[in-house]
Length: 601
Ligand SMILES: [Zn+2]
Image (cartoon, rainbow, N blue to C red):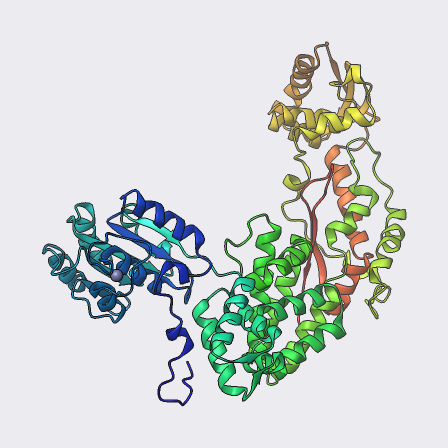
């Protein structure tokens, strides 16, 4: 904190430290609850105040201590929300010399011995005040033993003793302690409110400041009144006559969260030039490349949480709106951005010219981000349509369709290398790990109705009309082994309601050979409510479900190489090849990822 040179000058944060609840801005909920407790005479023995750094926990603790011990100007007052500020206790507490109000910083007094003093002291009645009050700051820093020692006192607190704990990390305070405290969460002060507060103080201090400058300060303070006042102090010390917005931006010397959000947003929109110029603004104001990239990672994290429906509890006011917008990008794209920026972060740290490396990260991100996600591409491919019913898809017409669909998305891109690399070499040597499980399970509920809606008249809703449907039905009925065998071993010859004739795959184990068809007939009869004749044929069988799936997958690999995005990735990383295509749901909303394996030169 800079302290301007006048001798009598008190830094604003101290001068305007609130000494009554009325002056505590932005904490209405807390004040209301406390007010009720005091009016009803239901004051807890222990309070815990939690909130981010600089939010006013210690100030609140002192105001509370004064309120509890204030005697009023005539010496007859009781606990109050509005300590008079004039009586003996008020005065002594404000100047930190009241014998019955003791402050301890747990950060530097973590041990059981430190707590022991408090515990011993709490056995004695207050010397002069109504209550003996212990204010323990950063209480989460106490050792486990210290907490245990404290717990005994909290369980049976002497009447005239109150504890006020303050912490930035409430999760580190044992539940046994918390359960004996009345908890108050101090909220970040909304930027608007903080700006108003700054306007008021600037006027009171005869500081001339542009409103926009104060807004910048309020945003930078991220909800902390103390930080806001310190910044105002600094700005006032630097600007001789008036505080301008530009001076504040220069002074902050770092990319604000808002700036980072704008930068990220530009990248995700593929606006390389905008991204670079935003970066340069942050850069010239003194932000380190590594910090900017790290801040972008944080922003992606917050946006992803928001997109996932679990938004951060108390996001900085300045970026709330930006986060909502970024979240609309979708989890898949944010995830992709995370990968790029995370890798980029270590690049920046390792690079001889971090600034250049940061530029490259932004360019790469802006280049990749607007491309369709693999899921979006595969959703457009014919074989990602509901495939339970379709004949084995003809792979020949897929690639052009995919290219046509994605071409528009690439328009803004200078050259995504969509047509560069010949696709032939990728398909040769891929592995197919863990595929069976990815393809087989159809969502239980979705399956029958989809089928019904597409092809089967309502009256025969439950009759499976392909081996695949039979296998799926086995699956939904919980007959997983039967389902697997049906997929693997049955070559359908003829199939209609109540009748299946199938060839069995050669080399079947004996027990399977004997029982598969009869088991199937029995189950089908049970599930469809009509007798089934399932017989074995010795020729003329078609492909098994599994063979169909394998073929389709092979085609998918082939096609993957023709997809512009994949192509672009493959050409970007020399030696890369497609190793896996993951499809987690086939019937609808397929979320599909194509994995590439990179090989460094
Ligand atoms: Zn008083």
